[in-house]
Image (cartoon, rainbow, N blue to C red):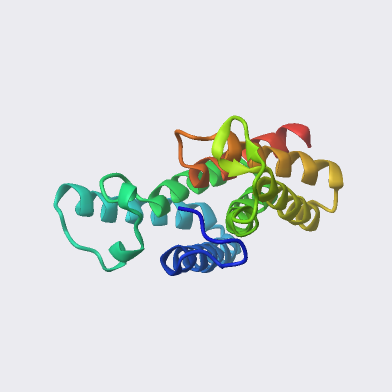
Length: 193
């Protein structure tokens, strides 16, 4: 159900988005810190394994975890978003250079945050994904392009990575976009550099 235009989402969804931004910024900061000691990749893979184990305990052994109130209804019976997001980040850190991973991850964090905020007032629906609209996708593209420019100081790399992240967000209806944006944007950024 869409929130009224000008209303900042339902409280539970707003809480999820704020948690999303804060948690992933902390993960990114810890990755960058650990990377100073050549342990960044190990940190990300280790964190992914921790999320995977917690998810398996929750799904297969029905152990109640304190963050279950943040889960959407459809996430309660499958691996939840942090596990899938960490899988995407782990793939990216193992395969691509740090600037591409950082840019792709920041695009996932802030693009995914701003798109529904702007999109809740939108009315021009994307033909291939009726859950998304051009206003939200445009906002994501702008935010992602600025992030790319701040990381690379190059509009060409920034725009191509931003367009890639936005297309992954809008075309993707079967996979978790939080899992896909970081490795796909990192791949495209690597290929064009």
